[in-house]
Length: 308
Image (cartoon, rainbow, N blue to C red; front, side):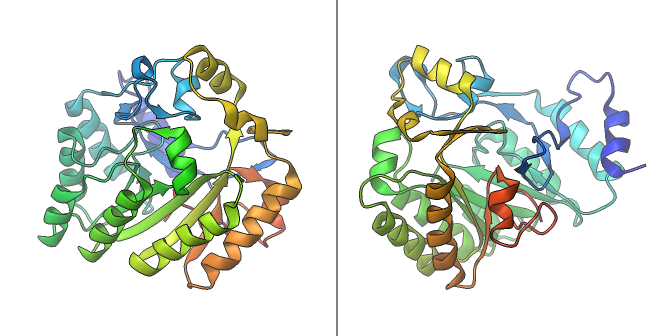
């Protein structure tokens, strides 16, 4: 019996049975190294449909049926299920706390979760955020309290963020947060996602990669391009979000609509080569199996954000 099967059985019929779960539902033609989700909250603190704030393409818009506002779950139950996971999952794994919500690193619930991870040395916690408020995390890391934490931040080109990431901290602030956390001694990673081929995109994204790789200590960068599930697009339109980004979507895949194959390959080829020049690991996010194979990867050897 595998760890993931054993833990699912142990969680059956619990009120929060999905606090810890193994993500493996990608279609056969989509390459994604399966990973563990820590569902401690749902939604994003930066999303506010009433004021049209937030990332205009966020998949949580569709997942939440148009109600992506942040809400944290019962912390006592969350901590209880994490403790159970520590005893049931024998192989060291990485728990992704940023799949169904922003990891919001200074939220009291997240602080309690990080404290719990600090009590053991086998499993690690992945914080994935678009925030830049890392003062407390840096202070705690400096005291040796966050050794089991990997910090990851999603960034984008400046012009792209200004247009479609409304009310989110500027990319420069996010990169600076990455720098500060890495300097404090924690492993840091980065997502450049979604890449949008706006006019002059090569220079913008080259500059972004250079900035990340020369000013921070990131060990891994995951690249993603525009992808849109139809439900996300429908609710984004209903909420009045700027969905002009959908004009780039030309191809249907097992993970929603994507840009045409040739353009995606051009983007990946350009950025992968640039990132490798710095000796940083690189991976692709939820891409087609055929695309991933063109770079010599598969589901078992793809080094991306959500796995150890």
